Image (cartoon, rainbow over all chains, first blue to last red; front, side, top):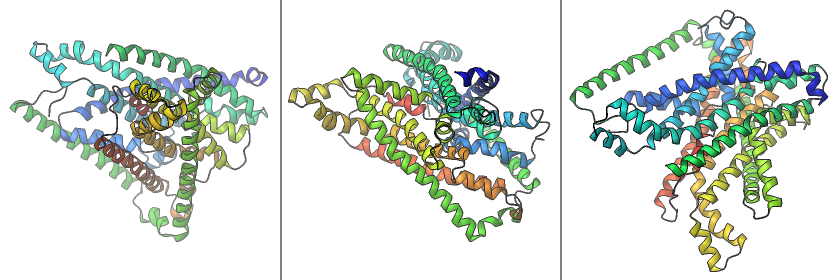
Length: 224
Length: 282
């Protein structure tokens, strides 16, 4: 308990940064992932191929490597000035972490959205067209309600994974929950207890999300 | 092609699609051209930055690093499968004394980020060589996920399977070993292998605790001054190695799935509970 109470100035900002990383990259990856999913179901073969290529490459690359690229290799390409981009050197690492998390998670979001769309049988759309619904009406009252049921539970799993993945930024000069222990070590605190506190906080954050996900899954699997 | 969102295109839509295709190709070419231009501009194509590949020492060390990655993967995979099997059995047990603790353990290790888990073993408990921390972390985390996969597989089988087995007079262990498990493992094979892909990717976390794996070696070579600090080329090569290994595993998964589909002995599950487990394999 002392380790936690004496170092609240580490735990507070640490988890705040984690949540900030999580929220920004969640929004970013949802947007990018949906665009990629649109590419993957598009009626144009070139677009489908582009989406598929992105997903295949990114899904099979370790997130640590993506972080590695953006933290160390990307500045060498001098596309953006590392100093001005993100304000400062540490600001750059934060932006780099965001870029890595968004680009990586988007591939998984894309797959979830795509498989969600695919669970809706083609007959549903054909039937609504036969009834004379417009494209918007069909989307809003037939396809999306059904697709949502198939998308939301696995999407929550993806977001939980994203929250946990933010800790990888610890190895790339971003101060957040994962790097609390290194700072504790500098203060000569017991690292084991410090780390167990970090783990406990994650359990507190993740378990409710898991439970919500399960209950949604259960409720919707009956309705389908 | 007709999908939920798009009807079979008529003549005007086909024309529009052709236009989209041209636009798509244009965007793609522009993107590639930009990347190539940036590479050329920042000197990534300089011959000096690629000379490192020619040195025998570098090649051997790179293979050593790759071997370390594979070692961590192999040890982690075997142990995780074992851990998963044991805790899945625990979760499915009829005895509350066994079921509840197994559930708690599985939920706990699934909720804690792998990085924190590895840090606990390396910095907290000081297990010594980083290899042990990496393997233990991989085992506990992926083992818990696999336990969940196994459990979902057994639960998704039609009830008639176990009922019939009990009716024939089998005991609990026999029902599990001879009837449920063989079918569950087959049904779950794709999910199991995609979790192994995750495990393979997660070995890269060893980088954070200075385990001498591929990424750590890439950092080392990438900072050597004599080669002109070839961080970008090295990253590309290492990424290609990871992608190749993961694709190989994924290919194995699709191959097994295809073979399964041919096989009449596999039961078609009413719903695929594995799907969100697979989708969650981030």
